Length: 121
Image (cartoon, rainbow, N blue to C red):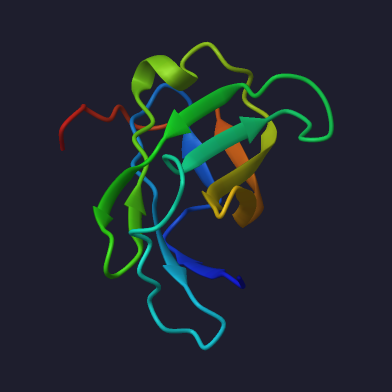
C-alpha cells in the first residue's frame, strides 16, 4: 500500500509552547485516503537522532476524519519545556496490515525564546 502525506506541520515551534500539528494521509494519486483500516493509533515521534535511542517525544494521534485521512497530534507545554532548543527528527507513522508506514519525516526545531503562548488559544 502506498501512502503520501500533505501536512500543515511547521518546521519549528517555541520550546514550552503548545502545538497541534495536523497531517492528511493521501493515496498514490494524491486523493485523501480513508484510514478506517489502520491497525493502531497514529504516532508522532521527535528524536534527537532517529537512528538510535529513545524519542524525546512520543504522541498518539487523534483521528479527526477517517474518511479524509486527517490526524491531529497535541504537543503540550509540558512535552517541550525541558527539552534542549535544537533541531530534531520528526516522524509520523501509521500501521496498516501489520506494516508501519512513515507518513512524514522532516527536521523540526525547538526555539528557545519567543512570545508567550497560552494553552487553548
